[in-house]
Length: 149
Ligand code: AMP
Image (cartoon, rainbow, N blue to C red; front, side, top):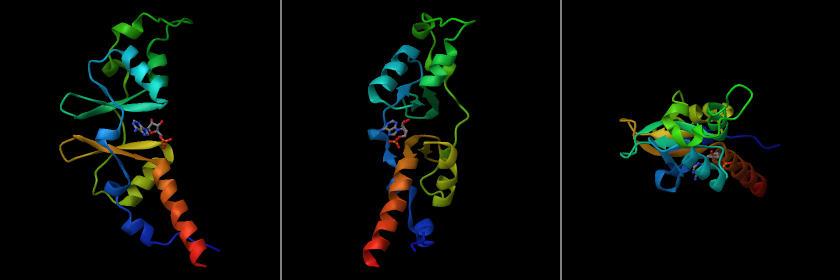
């Protein structure tokens, strides 16, 4: 029988597990929703961070939020997609992590979120931590135990 060792909670560092900012697809404040939808559809991601030109984190935009914001009374007001800006539809109330936060905090946040943004002390975007990378870590750990047994 294998078990998750407590070291995994102590030794795992958010900084080492996260996808760095330069590899994360994002959109900018001021972009029309149409651009955000293109980024989301082309990348295949459900949601991406919204940043300003200085890389400050403002929120998240998703396909669902975009569709919701162009939904009228029983019709889709498709013209709005080129006039509304991402900041008018994005979710500003998002969980955030710092690189030095404890791993257990990240673990808890990824229960309800497929990824969590990592920012520095001033709110500048540093990357994302995905639920996938945490699951990979646990799987690797359990596989190692199996090999050693
Ligand atoms: P994954 O863990 O790869 O399934 O990713 C889960 C979610 O995290 C995706 O649907 C995206 O919303 C986000 N995500 C993962 N990788 C990236 C990336 N490189 N750039 C932007 N968003 C990402």
